Length: 434
Image (tube, rainbow, N blue to C red; front, side, top):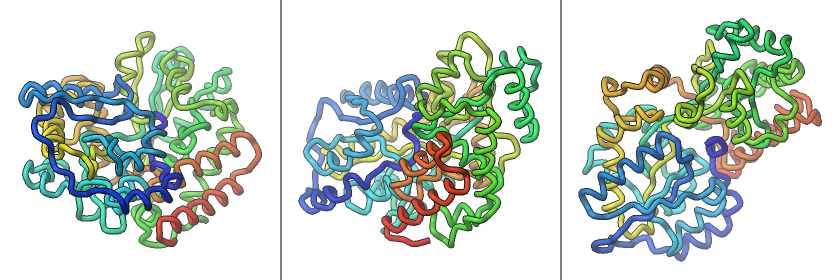
């Protein structure tokens, strides 16, 4: 997604949510023998997780006779309006939800999501989805991730990787970088040859993710816990933050990133990379399935930015059962199919990252390398999540700050000061302080 990663902007709906929650019916019961279950989602059709969900739907219908009615929504529809639908008669039986304090966490505190604890026990999901992959599916009474109550279920994982056009690297006699210094040197060589090396959008989240990967390169667990879980004060003067912000400014000045990024969206940069227009593109692994299917004119490879202490990512968006779902038991049964060995192994070979697959069943080499790289970070608790998970308002606020940097209306010092202010106000809106 592209534009879909990070916290859903729920501030728009917060006032109406409070009113809606008061009149909601939280005791909906399963209806007998439905013909179908409604499932709202917003992934790309070629994404590995979408393909896996539809594979699960085939198996589910074969056993139960109940079809899954897939309804693809835009990210904005669910982010800004989905919360209202969840407490109305229009609520779907199942929904894809962003994870994080300001998204699934907020919805859980308002009573709009079903507590999945009984289903977790019934199906043994906690034996399949563990460690870092479970962290964003569970929330405490304040809606902070990492709690004790399961309000969603992760069925895949994702993280940011740098994708390299191997043919363009070969054309200009440049090696694929394996160290950070080599990465910077490669960018400079492309600029010297008249090529803008890095595809990045500033209208949506590309610049934010690139910045957060630079933050994650030098961060430690204390910094991450302070940022996401409010365990202590974020040190805004730390080199972790200042160096990352200054590096983005430096890369813009040197031409590593084009100034036209200010007019580009995620789909623009994704399509540009698919067409072979850029040698380097940092994006989420949700695009790997697309690349595998749609890139036919050049070879590519990918890895986390060299020498990064953390990888930006986590278990994927959650499958949630709205509290007003009329078919909760069947919806849970469908989720169990999604977590089955057959579907998880299928996902791994379709360009996605499964959370419960048999590694020996993954035969696609590029998928296998991606899964192994993710597991190496997840098993070491070295996933930095996304920066906007800390507060719902940051999904739009941080990218807006970087758009000003690209436009030249703010320098790096002013941008970091702006992010600091927006972070503090966003966390305060969540009912916390930092």
